[in-house]
Length: 111
Length: 476
Image (cartoon, rainbow over all chains, first blue to last red):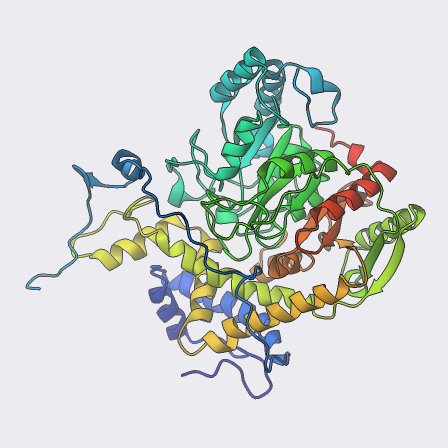
């Protein structure tokens, strides 16, 4: 595992490794050209460098705040209601066969 | 005629005639400004004629509304100014659209935005940059730049925006109009295309504080379709709007009048302090030392939420699908469709978000940002023990030149005074508050605690009543 913050408390002081950028693009399901990958390496390094200011804040014992509202589960009434029609659900589909979404083969040869 | 919320000499004009006049202005000025992605002329004229015929509609009867193109409407497209959703037509409409229609609104068109609401200039649009009506060589701000430009150029009576880190207030500031970001949960997000789900709110961009209050009156409230909409009663925002608040305490954070601001922005804030003092308000010095950490916190949380929300665009059920070459598989379909469908800024945010959420970095970035988020919220809570509203700039500068901020980080830093409102989930409003030396509008921002929109709007109305900035118009 790479250590995001160095001993001086600043993250990403060095440029991100190109392999890291490629790995993130893969996780994000984005096909990037070599030129884009290189551009994002520079930009992400600069942005993460700025973000590293956070490492200087004393957050010991602070409860993370994922949401501004004090939320509790809200349950709807358990009553049947009309669902969206199939036509409405399929109206924006890029490829349809009959009443189904068409997708490329998911399983490879011999699977 | 039904009563109109708009304080305008045209308020008693029939809806049809009013709609025709707005459509004529759109035809004349939109080719230059590029504020609207789509004009809904036929639907609007039909709706206006119906309102005239039936004398129907409520608070907003016959008023034309321009809707940011990331809010789902069944009329026209909902594109988010993205190639990904270029042809997308929503099979359902946002809750606020239903509410506005019931109040008599006439939807005039869909406004341009930074793709998926990611940006501060409306240059990141697949359909081209929006131009500022005050100076077409400059940006209108963003991401609701199309809505703000349309409002400033009178291409609508009212515009709708969304605000994740300043996207209503900053363009309102740069275009010389009013922009209100309600408290998180005050307005249903159902039908707002998700960007940062713990930050996003819909709100109005208007000519006056009264119009903003009228729109909020219509769109506020709990919604069964949005479990994060707050079950908090909606007060009457209009009833007390013109009553000045006796003993108003205006907090001025010392971090907000900064050397990093354009001098004209600081001058506007100092002048606004004197306006409030003249109105009998008490000015309170406030410290918000975490202000500067807002950008770092926001640019972890918002991209993290965006990378998760935008995972839905996979080329399968809706949106752009790439053509596969022989031998390419399902992974390639996802990666290629997303590469072709998203623009550079959206990809950049997805990359940042994916990075900060990835294994090994989550605690150092995402968890830490959520901890700082709480510290920022606590800091606001303490400030509001000493004041009713916080006064400061909306944007550190007036409108900048198109192409003037090519480095992404320099663009992100524009949001320094607006992101913390969303991080804490409180409410804020930008008001016309000055003019720069080069005759560009400058906005001042007021912030108030969660669900204190009544106080926020009344304090804003006090300033508006005492100044003339909101009466200025760009010469087109």
